[in-house]
Length: 114
Length: 114
Image (cartoon, rainbow over all chains, first blue to last red):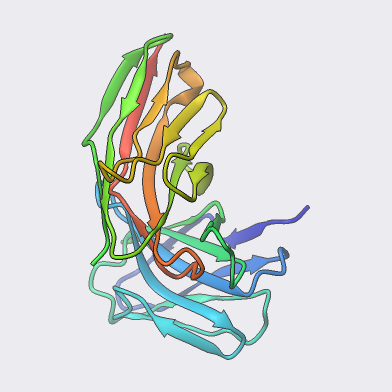
């Protein structure tokens, strides 16, 4: 089936630890995104990538890092520098020159810092 | 800059009631407009979209009309079901050719009671 796979679905981390969230897609989409969702705040863009080996900071990139070594994969690392990492993280994709701007989302990863 | 303002929730309705969730926007260009839905514990799914003024997007009994004169894109459904309980996000893409430029509202929680 075509789609976006995020893993793990739930993750617990101790303070001071880095953690990496996986996002894999088989939609052959060029662009990939990471969003953070907090209750009552909607979605905020962390990083995005429009092409392999290139990525750009979004609105809240501090404390996060990404890589884009393959078109299908866009992992997000939540570093110990992120002051409030407990949140729901969503990966999304789109065609680079989609004439409607539609995004396709994975099912999300919920990170809890203990 | 671009912004999306949604009616605050939570909204609680009885089954078969009429639903309206208000959404207004500001944009510098001529955006595409979207409603996304998020069921509990899942990612977002596109519900409907409209790409030009007076277009009506519709899906699963939901409708929204792109009103340029009032910069609005209100979501309506004539008769809600318990299964419609979810969070609804209004969003815009400006300019519509660049998927990066997707701005979300803060979301409206809908609960439908049997």
